[in-house]
Length: 264
Image 1 (tube, rainbow, N blue to C red):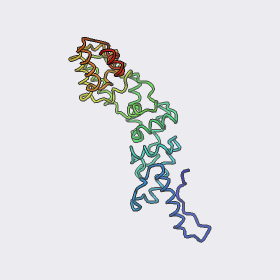
Image 2: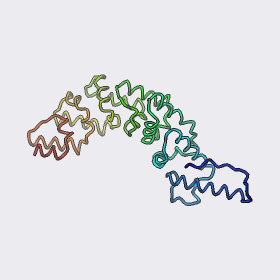
Image 3: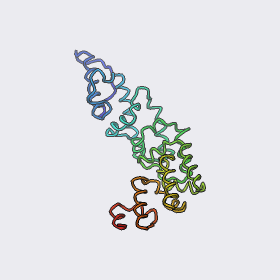
Image 4: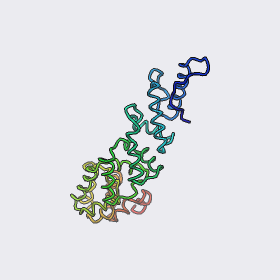
């Protein structure tokens, strides 16, 4: 159980007050070590002060009131250590939790999952970042944005301008706006791919080397989710050597055993 904030009370015994304070501080330190916020191997002279510990406990209590569990704190501290800094006032991140419940319609458990997967959500401005992103994604037709997984968490934390770059890329290769929107709604992972290092090379390989059409890509947007060098190119060359041509989904979705046994 989380220990309460330290309070200087008038002792009922003759035990010196500083000993009571010291013992309480040590217990709180043990708790912070147990949940992974304080390094268990930290040197005594590097331990947080009682005032800092009080602030960390206040932040922990706030996060627990929003559905975060003890088991989550080690991950949060590792991914986003500034969350437990004395510079962060929990009241400043409360609007994000309100947004997740009221705007995103996420449950407490779903909100927890999103935060644990991407704690930097807590530092995004609701009015200028999170809400515009949510509205833009919904406008494209992206669904289930409240799913508590890493992809949806990072997607919500992506600025609208960055999302628009992917739409512009898809339009540059020949898709109409409605087609690009549908493409992204079917495969929202595309928003996390780099254009120059990932999307463009794969598209160029598709049309120039594989001699495939844009229509095939529209039918199977998941093409962009496969590795060019480990999956797409090796299987293309394997089929080409055998004068075989199959639909993209059969070429890429099948496991190695099934694929290579089919086309020996």
